[in-house]
Figure 1 (tube, rainbow, N blue to C red):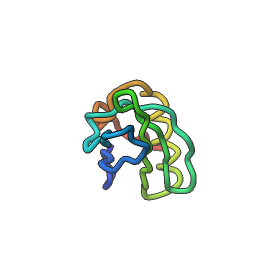
Figure 2: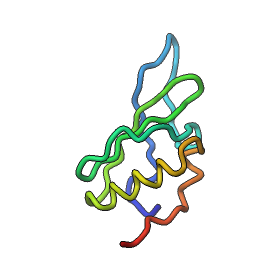
Figure 3: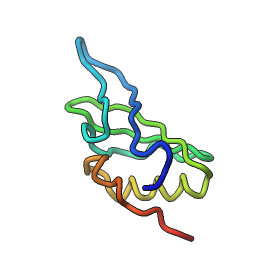
Figure 4: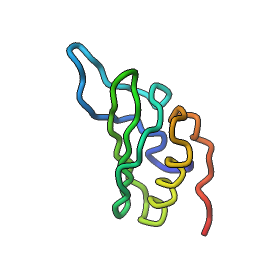
Length: 90
């Protein structure tokens, strides 16, 4: 995907005692898309036995909708594995 913030590199979530957060997209698996609102896509990723959240800001609402659909389609895959997926034209 040709987006300025892609792939995401900032993740948030609860960490178990001594736990860490991922530092790179190849460490997480795409989970559920939580919502698409305006130009922001919020989704969960699996990281070991934990779930971490990601917010991805894109140029506009139409792009956010398309990115949300791509994430839903690739649920369960490594986040970095979809870096070359093209965002469809209208």
